[in-house]
Image (cartoon, rainbow, N blue to C red; front, side):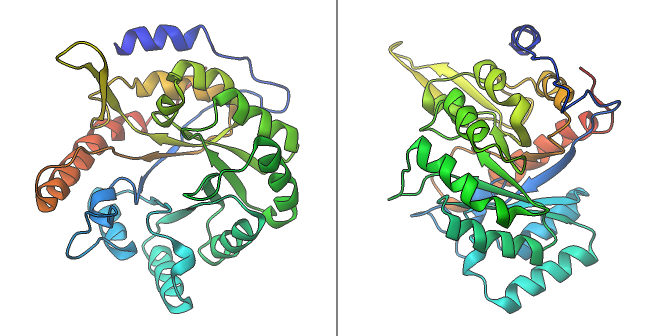
Length: 299
């Protein structure tokens, strides 16, 4: 399956523009996320007795020798008080772990809050999911927000994650219409299945705009009664995702410098067993990915 995807991707690589010449060596940094350990951090209705917090995530980075951590909206940093933010920032600096942060609900006010948090944590990437439970702006409203937020992004990059609602072409149009070099795409390798789009289609539209990558492997199996499919997560390297082909596809644009492991770990009957499986899947994924991130990719 990986070879077939690689062939598809090879036919869809857009040449780099004058603004983004091909790099001599493309080697993004591998990182972990609060969505690598989503069950341990806490899923609504399935909270563990002791949820994994930011210090637990730094512990996991230390265990695996990873020096990049992205905090997503499942551990909302805007709810932290000043002492907690400062303590997190100090420990990350002392351990040499680079931070990226994330949020949802794309408004100018929320971007301003997270821009300030990013600067406090020495983070340069702020990843956003546009929507929230009660918030679903139109494409024109999203583009207007990008324009309004441009003055807030000095020295920061805003990465908009492809999610279920917007097709990839719509996402690209929203970002390009804003004409803001500080706004790009946080490309998730599985989310756009919810919009009826495969990875080759998503990459064709969004690869030139990608500033951050979410490596999320998955499997698709036909149900036993044949009328439908199940989409489930897998450890990296054990599903449909061809990671080397993906990184080769991104190489010509020289904009995506960090790649974050995320997992869709199917739950077990007991939350303790789910968390144990998640830990195992993370270790298997890192063991597969680490060698890939020790050499450079070329278009």
